[in-house]
Image (cartoon, rainbow, N blue to C red; front, side, top):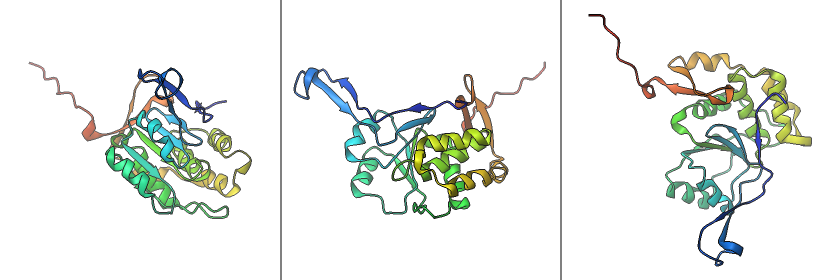
Length: 215
């Protein structure tokens, strides 16, 4: 497999809270991730719609932002959770029905938020974390210069047997050149090795070294 991917099969994490046996055997707390949770890149995550039982796990991510791709109003319980943690919500409503077309403009707007490191760590989600989320992540991969076969392969891994032809066509045709032109104020900054360490930083976030003057 060409692309790097960290999968999570929904198995809960157990951490010792040092409180004895009050919270279960050995004093363990259970951290359950949202359905279809996975790491996309450093400080970028994807999943299905988080439930209240997933909130303790989300706390471990230190989220700064959430990108929701659902049309429906965000649940009050989830809004209260985000507000209590000072997590910013970006909602880009995309129709999740099978025959609906993915809107280019909405994906581009969501992608601009996604690549802004000032919004990281960030969680992307739709209802099941498969189709709409897969399209946004796929467009991110195209911006990272992934080959199309790898972009489509990653989408299919998460969508499984429910992969949608309309989504695959959208990913094939989506043109990232427009976004690159719009982001002329952004520069690439690499940390570590490999594409998974690629970071996009605004100029104002980069410390400029003072010029060296000859005496």
